[in-house]
Image 1: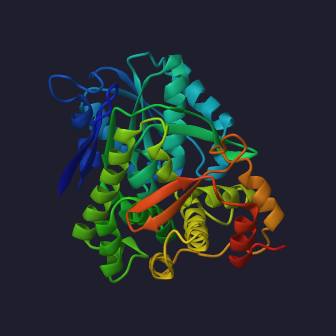
Image 2: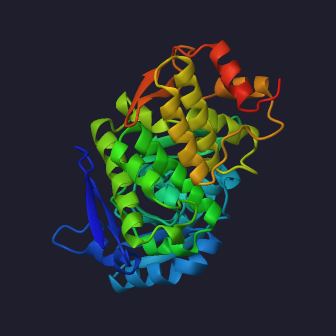
Length: 372
């Protein structure tokens, strides 16, 4: 199965390719045709982590070298806590040692952390070189690899340091998900459910009809392909209308406001990004219910889908309410001192608002388990 999803941006249009076995044809997609995305013969810096590289590094290298590229690798530790400027420095050092030039490119082979860091390094090395995203986690496939958001974390907040830098190509090979741990697959499903709430009611209802969503092996190839293509299409639709988050694109942060606060307070341990987003979606749904934006039946359907995916829906034990509120004030979506929330109104429809009060937050976060 193969689907090609265009991201029609005016300055840097590109394609998201969802193709079974696509990793083995990466070099052809990158260098084929009359107008190659990166001209064969150029240097490529492949950035990955040791675990992913062990599984898929040889396949990626073989595809790229057979297409005529000179390839060097840079392996970084896995995990959100390594998404720092220190890791970026290691990519810079590798780029310098390999003599990467302006017509060269970086290739991100890994999950969202590797993709974000490689994209940021590419955006800033020599004032910008090309980047190719080859995501290996479900979360990266449907979210982080598309749209050009790159960056690293600051000790006081997630993704506070970054840049917009669109990829030349996003290559998604569903077969690599076979080695993805079940917990990481569920984390990606949080973002898939997000698209169903903010943009694609049909996707949401497709997920409701599926017997199980907690492990990749229960989905089947056809359903997995549909989940990937519908999610990527939703992201492409939004990004093509608002590349740099001037308005509409903010809806992609549904569940992320409270989610990022939870991640930060947990020091990126014990809860992963998708799990935090799931908690954040429950919080946003509860706030929307409190403000009469949607009804209890819709809130229950969202909650049921998260439970079906075996995602957490309560704030981790021990997180204090006041600490959560302080962390929320560090959110990068603050504007004129007011925090913006993305709240659901119906399946496939949300609104952006700064009308959420301190009392609203205290009530909802306490109900979800924050300690006073």
